[in-house]
Image (cartoon, rainbow, N blue to C red; front, side, top):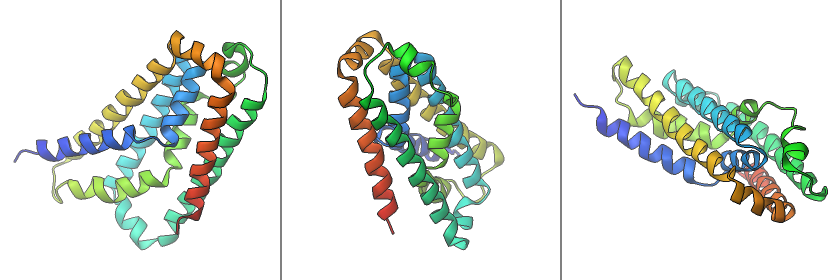
Length: 205
């Protein structure tokens, strides 16, 4: 039996989920503006978080979320807090005078880039919903082990490729020069979006 259609479906839907702007998108692009290395680090951390979600889905995430209703709420609350924290940091950064990005942003960030990406990914309740429902239902109930491994590798490859491309694009000199001129409104906009996403997530029943 060929499992290529199921794996292809997972790849396409995963790509669409990544392309849709959200916390992962903003975390990668805002850090890539600081430096290419930091942007790629956040991209790697994001893919690592997605890998964990995929592995949890395979071992029964959907069943767990159905049986322990409050677990989803815990993930949602943690996600809200982290989004508000990241948004507040960007809003505060927008108030500071512009300095050379390598000094003002990259060198003064204490949290390792992969950890930032991993935390954003792991505190995203949309990931819990995606991997706890669609991801696991696409796979046949009695799929062999290699298919499950292949599915995890597919979501890792798709997410890492997309977010790495974003990091490379937003760390180019042209984009960084533009950011240097427009840093305050860009940081304010990104911070505002993250705060809005956090508030929206907090109000979801």
